[in-house]
Every structure is written in structure tokens, then in C-alpha cells.
Length: 296
Image (cartoon, rainbow, N blue to C red):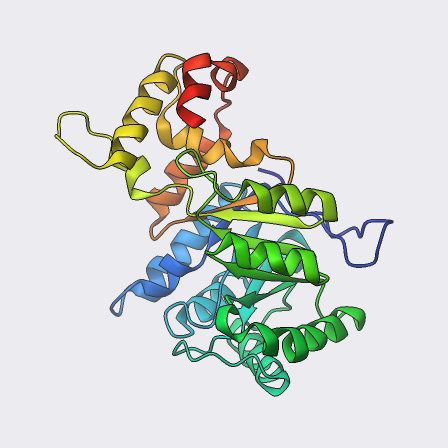
């Protein structure tokens, strides 16, 4: 895993580079009980030690706890060594607010919880609040980007069509897609093609779905996703590759995918995932005819 480059592209003052893998902050925010803060810190530390230099969070992840925990764990790290993204448009209790004042207030509160500068700011699933996001939220973010208070502007959603519309009709630097582009679901391919054409970076999350992780062939199932996962897993095993390893590597084969987020709630989990990332996947797997048929 490589550290981020904060050298701006010569094309525009807003283009930037993302590390290939990052740590997603939703599980970090949901860690329960009095031990949650300590577990979060050792998990983030383990990710950093494994070479991860991109961290993504949001106010609504654990009602602000995710941002607080990332801020605490990353405070002692050299700020120029990692990239940090958070989201606006959804408050700590999930209430939507895409107004100009709401965006400024959200960023101020996130900055206070994090105690760190924010690189990438993402509209958090504007959905039915599309028009307000276009009319009020994005102009604020573009203003902050122009003032170099943030580095880049983007949007995050689990609806690839929404992100596709935003990429088509607005000026974004990046999109974060939850699901919909993985070994088991490639429905978001049109979005990625548009991102590539428009020079927008795409971030994939949710690639280690339960269907990928639950491939125990001893258990009977009628779930088509698990059945497909088992068939793909059988092909992967012929090349000495586990299904999770292939799932983590697959999205990055599309040139629009700049980063893949990994969700983890323990140091053991992130270390295991990081170990998978470091293992190379033979090109022969990606070219295997049966593998390609299963992905068709």
C-alpha cells in the first residue's frame, strides 16, 4: 500500500491522488461499550502500520464517534502522510441538511471532532434533496475548494445512478460508491465509464460482502449470490487465490477506481485484510474463461 500524493495535478488545482486502499469509518463508529474507543484506536493504528494512508468517515457514523475516534488515533501521525475524507448533508442523527448554512455548520463540527484538516468532502447521499444539494451545498464546497480550505469535492451514495447524474451534471473530483461494483455486482459499470471520461476518481466500498465471506460449501443454500460466490471461489482456488483476496483486488482493475475502502472493527480484521491486499493475484485468473463467464 502506498502513501497518498498531495501533489496537485497540472491539469487543474483540484485533482489529487488517492491511495489504492483505505479504511472505512462506519464499523469504527459502531464499536459499542466503554472499550469502543480503545478498540478503535488500536484498529486504526494497525491499519496505519499496515500501510493504509486513506481514512474515510462521516458525522452519522456512530453519531459522531467515528470522527472523534479517527481524530484521536491520527493526531500523532504526520498530517502530510495520510488523506482524510468526511461527509456533509447528514447530521449525527441522520437528519438531512443540504442547506448552505448546514454544510458550513457540518464541516465546522466535523473539524472540531476530528481536530484535523479535511482533504475530501463528500455529499452524503443527497437523493431526494438533489436540488438543494446542487443549489446550495455544492457551491459552498466549491468555494472552500477554491480557497484551499479543502482539497477536493465529491459525493457518496449506494445508488450508482444518482452518482452518475452528479458526475454528468456537476463538477466533482471524486465519488464514493457503496456496493454495486464488485465481483458479484457490476451494475455500476456505466458510472465508472463516465467517471473515466470526465476525470472523476471513483472509490469503491462494500466489496467484502457477506456473500463473499460466507462461502462455506458444506451449508446448503438457495441464495443466488452465495451460489455465484461459491462458483467464483472454486475458480479462484485453482490459482491459489481466496475469494476475499480476489474481491479486494477486482474493483481496481477498472481504471476509474482510484481506491477501495475496507471496513474493519478490530486490529485482527484489518491486518488480515491488509495481508490479502499485499498478495498478488495472477493475471491468469482474470483471463480464465470460466471466471469471465461467471462475471458476464
